[in-house]
Image (cartoon, rainbow, N blue to C red; front, side, top):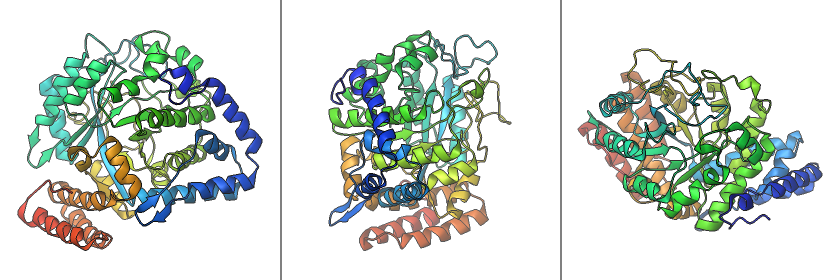
Length: 480
């Protein structure tokens, strides 16, 4: 029986509820009056305290996903952009993945790290190699990383992850520093999540891959990841351990997208029901080609139009969450996704272990083929040309604005008083430290225009003064 407050995965990701939801969506997909009412319900409402946005339930959002009326679909994209503008403005947070090790004991059929793949080069970074990778990332301008490692209790125990985090945070190169390290590692115990919390991680990220239990178990035939219940309840254990920023994600293409969409939203509803705060981020990767992996063998792939519609409807259903798209997607798709919900992107990514210190992009240990291979600097300039603010901000994490504290500020609209100026100040740092002179000049001109959009005069004045110190006096790390 469906129960979002249950701690049993079969009850909060309830198969019968998802099937009932899909049937309900099919029955109502042409009910244009209902669809119009749902879109009106979802629209952000301006109040004296900021913005109010109610979101949609998994069942309501599934009706919109099933709808094929072109004018309503256009309206969905418009509402998604309204919501994103209301809560995230034109800020886009930038990050890079850092692969520590591709040793893995699991047998996942969609991942090149699977234990039976004899073609991939197995690598694990030493702490000295990690220092070099982090230095290379800092030389690019990155301040925020997502740590990746395969599941292997011998090669990648929790002690290795903790030591690596300590190394990452210790590297200070020129004006560079990693200010936030998010972690994407296998489901583990409450005790080990407490260790990660104490190590100062940002968000704990774990993709479900697929919410369809039968498909999940078939795609994970051997290894600890085979346990659907253990994997699906990982975020609960992380939050119990005090990690109040957690990230969800589905690997679209493994099972039918409408099922995955409903399951993903039910997972978000579960976290909200149990812990009072939903996911900090939601990621939307699609299956991509890699060593020993052919995405064509999965018959549930989705086209770009459907993919963008899913992004828009996640934004509508879970309005306050950050949404992430990686370099799995090409420049064209990423540009469209930024306008309908995405608030975080990776840039200059390499998905190989030790990839950032290699002179040329290595392919022998990649987790997936990178579609957008532009440098971070190219991505930054691209965003500015589209009138987005590339943000390297990590202030909320370091100021303790996480979990329900972040969400309360976001829901009230107060977060914009911090995020907009912080984005501009971190962009100024990037331009001064890493950009070419012509890009620096045009970027600083862009910042001057964006300063006018800070509504509170006092905050705008402080921000202007701080940016002047960044540019002229080489001072760093101002934050609200």
